Image 1 (cartoon, rainbow, N blue to C red):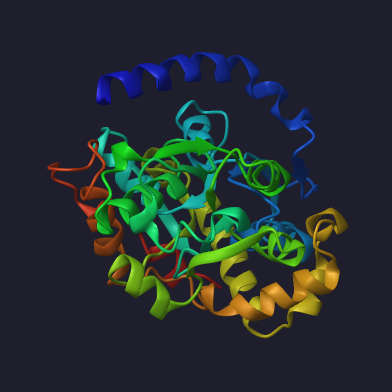
Image 2 (image 1 turned 180 degrees about the vertical axis):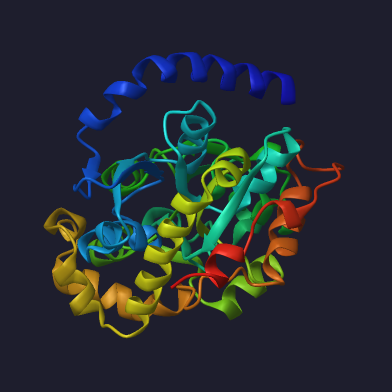
Length: 345
């Protein structure tokens, strides 16, 4: 499994190295502008509220204040964003912290430099037609389950929840459906029975009456019930080699994100919506976007410090089923650092 994955990664790296120079031309790219130090960050779904701090920091002007010209690139899945970073196409990834653990199992050293979410903020939705057949993950055997992509954090969580509820992950059919409109279409057309997603997609689907909530991990209590403890999710993670060689750039990025996290704590959903691009809430509407934010505001880390009990929970989840982590000696202390958050101004 490891050799196969690394072979795919190597092939991707060759391809990405050739296209890295044109990445800024992609339609899913947004630059903070200015003449500051250039930094490229790939985010596993820029319009998802779980990744709100990345675009919000740009809209608030915090990158420019730090002397940075940050280019945000949109990628549908964190696993693909991670591959881009390993290939050298971007300097950082806005994605789930658990990728740093999975990649250590594959011999790659990367670390979270700021923690943005203390819970996954994920919701498992099922299409209304299966309501009498799927009441919990214990009913998943033989079902088609949507994840952002194979190897993504939603894939990790889906497999863990299946196993925890007595279903062999090999007995479920995981389907990469990305997020937003592609995920909505997959559910509404019956291509998947259930799918794991976040706001604003959750509100958009529930408003149509075509889906129902199977389980919800938008609160600390619900996350502990499903996963056994705090599960730090969204973070900015980077290759350890980059963190060690560019501490000044990393510090400026963390300064911007700590300021953004503090701004989030003192503002309402309506004020957040006013800052965001209109296409971020085009599906559900601006009011629904604001309401969704207000209902899940507690998912955001107010300090940026990694919750001490969080990394062991992430590790336990991955060790339960992931062959790249299971049985490996993983040092979680090397998968994150708080020194930049502690020094943030």
